[in-house]
Amino acid sequence: MSVRFAIVDTMRPLPLLEPASLARSSVRRNHLSRGTDGDLSAVWARSGTRGVLAHRGYLLIASGHLVTVTADQVPEGGTQIYLGIDPDGADRIGIDLDDAGRSAVDARLAAERDRDAEDFLDGPTTGIHVTEPTWLDLRHVATELDDLDIGLACSLVAVGNWHRTHTHSPRNGSPTRPAVGGWVRRDPETGSEHFPRTDPAVIMAVVHTDGDGTERLLLGNNAQWPADRYSLLAGFVEPGETLEAAVIREVWEEAGVDCVRPVYVGSQPWPFPSSLMLGFTAEAVSRDTRADGDEITRVRWFTREELTAETAAGTVWVPGDVSIAGQILSAWLSGGA
Picture 1 (cartoon, rainbow, N blue to C red):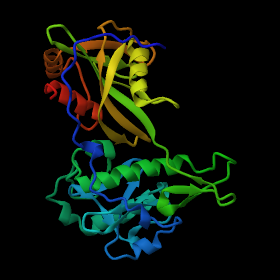
Picture 2: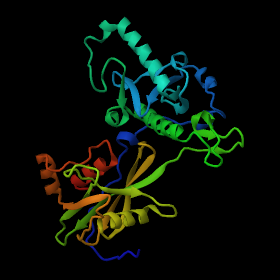
Picture 3: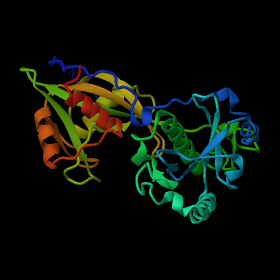
Picture 4: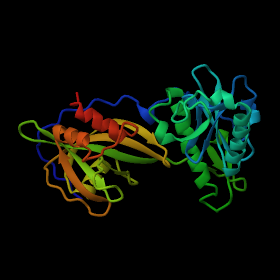
């Protein structure tokens, strides 16, 4: 596809996004201490080591933080992943529980509730500040956990997803085993090593600027969404493609819009199951559109005033700040630089 470049009025630039939501972390990954195999007993033996628990994208949380456990509180099964050291220098290990491990933890928690029921009477019963340890979806707590906990949780969920779905060697189909502190799977027969995958995806604020300086943002409605839900266009980067080329290609494929001058504004891990979202702005050559009708049902241009009014009225729904889409939208609505 040849891209038609034309002179257009330049949009007001957006500043680089500050780390927010899932992009925050105060964990030092400390890869030199991960070990050479999947046995983390030496790490557990270090003073102050604590573990955090996950099960299929849910984290065990109480009183606004991830629940921490000692080695003797970790059930059999699941996968242990060395996550790094916290700001105090203590090692942190993530345990991605299998179903049996989750059941064992739930049984222990139930016994503790029966024993200490009075301790929970006056505490909150829902949300991240619930007093009783509760399993909560990472997406629902991403903006509320502190930088340490969100950094631990995001890595644990992402690597845990990979372990559950990549149990065999892609070379010969042999079962693989965790190694290097949970960051590698190794084929014990051939010694071949396999690493977690991360799928890069671009997500872009495409803006058209009129001659009088009026900016309009292009949003799309995905075929799987309700008719009133809109977001930025996005798509995966293809092999052999630059990020900038992916921005231009995806906008053309999904909306029929030629755009130019992609500019990077920030990134965010999105471990559902294994993406890295790379945020861009781009300038539209014209306001002519053509939704692809497959992935994108309809596309619309919004001025700041129109989008603000429609979201306030509830006629249009857009992402919140848990995702980079919502963060870029907020930056554009605020007027950029």
